[in-house]
Image (tube, rainbow, N blue to C red):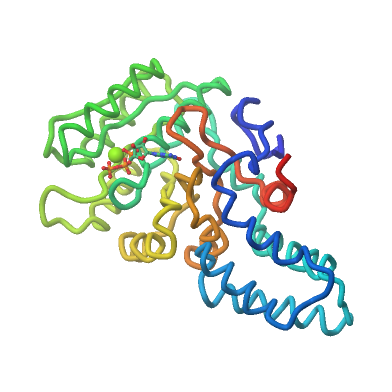
Length: 318
Ligand SMILES: Nc1nc2c(ncn2[C@@H]2O[C@H](COP(=O)(O)OP(=O)(O)OP(=O)(O)O)[C@@H](O)[C@H]2O)c(=O)[nH]1
Ligand SMILES: [Mg+2]
């Protein structure tokens, strides 16, 4: 992993992602090109393999068109050379010309008395609360002081869950009672952060509301309330679940509506056969994946480095 992109410490930098079972979704593509000559059906087989791993139909066919054009214009016949072109295409789609290090840096606190505030949003059960805890861990590891706001007031169990993470992390959790106004929790958490000299405010939100209030309106209100405390613009991290594939992207789009986000975390990458969805995230949200969740433990969050990731995808498992 690229250390420049990692403000968190060393713990998640070393492991090769290919060690992870989540990456079996690309092994089919690896095997397609292990032949002596290019068979006519290769493009259909490649398209099928991409779609089965949830790359998305239009992205898959677009990618194949580009590879085909390149192969034709350079008169390539060797399957391994074609495979190299596929890899280059995938790398460029993952990178999207995005400056990852500045995006990661934008999630760093800017200094005393002006804590960074991050709202974790996403549909039910995608892993918002767990991701918040994992990011809290990263911030703590890199020397920051974190406070958590329990703004998922929809279920009492959600408040208990985040309190348990707070105890494990030894971090204060500001909570109100079930059913209370999430924006009030946001306000109180930021005020507490200022009073207690915390520089990172992480806000857990609900995937649905206890009343008929539109969720988007509620998220907007939380942002407005945060701004009223005098801090800089709060950040929004969208959490997506890999195992829900293309469907999950559509749900998240409906959920977020016109609200943008400042970063995306793709959870449950471990063990999912739909990892190809990572190639569609940018197209859907115009925001790349910044982190990948690879398990249920605090350490199971990896900074996403597109080049390293693509190399890992195609390296032979040892
Ligand atoms: N394997 C795996 N499980 C994960 C990952 N992230 C979260 N989970 C699990 O997914 C389940 C749901 O996670 P939560 O963090 O509670 O999800 P949530 O979005 O906060 O859920 P709601 O608050 O109900 O909307 C839990 O069992 C987590 O342990 C991941 O990266 N990998
Ligand atoms: Mg939750």
